[in-house]
Length: 97
Image (cartoon, rainbow, N blue to C red; front, top):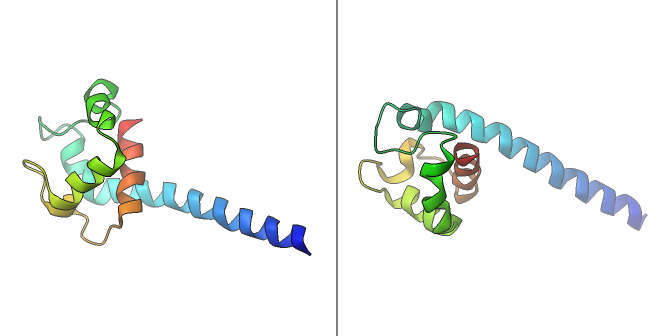
């Protein structure tokens, strides 16, 4: 019985992570890509490791605060008004890889 409970909990955790990755792509497409695909020169482009490196060095919490509060030309929430901190973290990971 205990093994079954552990297996179920692990499966739910894995499903949640896979779901978050799919949501991150959708959030990027609807909210972040408009600026981070290169249209806005000061926004770091998706996949530009050199541009993301100094930002990532500040830590994920700092990046999430920047998105939440807005930074320079990026409005508060980064055009995703219904995103959670976890959503922002997932999208930042997608963009910085």
